[in-house]
Image 1 (cartoon, rainbow, N blue to C red):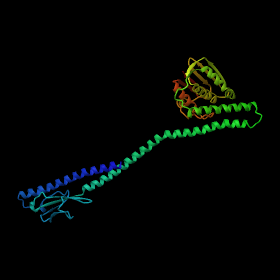
Image 2: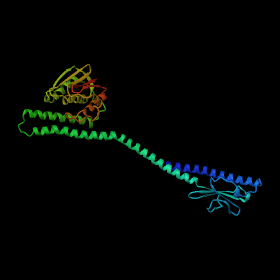
Image 3: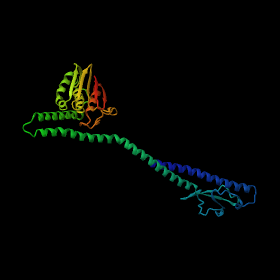
Length: 357
């Protein structure tokens, strides 16, 4: 930007200098023509009696280079046609050809240098204004562009804290229960639940961060009914802890999908249905006509938050733990297999997830 300002200044300086020089030359020609016409008309006037515009400072000199009229007091170098100084220039003209004894006309101009001074000031002011505007725009653009990074960093920090908490809770439960040599049935059940929770956390983290999940590698035609029944046994203890009743209507359905992908999809939805349900709540699962519905009567999700629930690290509520990657895994699996997903929810009434294969 400084280079542009310098180039602009030099260009304007050259143009204005040429313009000013032309004006001064025209004024010199005007004086010269008046002197010549006066002499040609045989008017007996000397140069002192002639009327000249006082637009510029000027002086008239004879052949001996002596000043005969004018208000220029500076020394004149008659070997030059243009004498440039720091704050003015003097143009020398000899077009009078000694009429009325005038051999040289010297015209002094300082308007060019005053104009350049103003130009410098204006360029500096303009430069500062532009610099301020660009800096301001740059500041807001930087904030705008860095905001997603900042948001992601905050989400990641929250995710790390939540993950640490989610792992710490079941690990603490296992350690406390294992302190007794003779474990009660309740303590064994507590250890099983904690181990189940750690297992699900591990599987989700492995799926997100360690596995390549964008490519379909081990696709086989699976019996979804069979897998759902197996996973329901897996979650029995977790549901019993909150006295949640799970009912289901399943028909034999075959679909080409990697087994781990379907298990991640189903387990994350069922895990949330249990986690965000109330005590003695209900969950109903249906599988028919290539549509899987998982309905609960838990805390529900507000309408304005539904659009964000599939974003990684997003949590619609801080109730009952979680760390915001489960539904992101579900969305990625749906995208991978072109499975249509729909969510219907009402606060304090429950949520229904529907998957159309």
